Figure 1 (cartoon, helix red, strand yellow):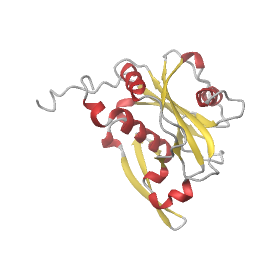
Figure 2 (cartoon, rainbow, N blue to C red):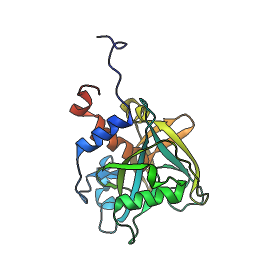
Figure 3 (cartoon, one colour):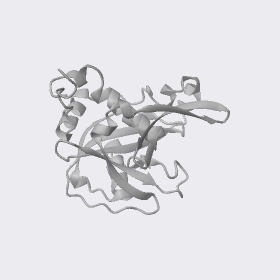
Figure 4 (cartoon, rainbow, N blue to C red):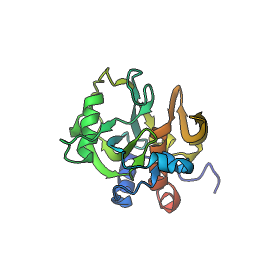
Length: 222
């Protein structure tokens, strides 16, 4: 079979939902994934008892055969990760019922994404960031027809990226920069004039590894 005749990967929200549910639940606190995966010499610095709990929503919009993922551009005024591309999300508050509630609450507060359009379909393993957070990526399918209202104190803009682009490992580039006299490695996934990197790119890479790489990706229809 030629490359031209090869079956096209199914990048629909329906298939994303199936893969997320097939992957099953993930135990909290394993600290297997995070910025330290590419920086094992910094494991002790990143993984510690002072990690703050956070949750982000990974919103996959049902756009037919070609689902897309909602991402935000954070404002430059924020203290943490100013100006960076991010999933909607933030700290888990004591009032939150669970991490799913925290992720949806943050999505509503940041971009006005109403919970009535959100279907939770799973979680990724906790992701430990070098900035001191243990982040739970909450996987969701978003029904079209929503209207967004951005919180200007937190979000400069919001946009969608095709799921197929993000799940293509050819778009995952490993780069490095020097911080505090140490070389630190990270993933980057430039998309047009948007620069996706760091924690967000790391979570996207985890999503690819858990749902779209390996034997699962070779199943019929994948």
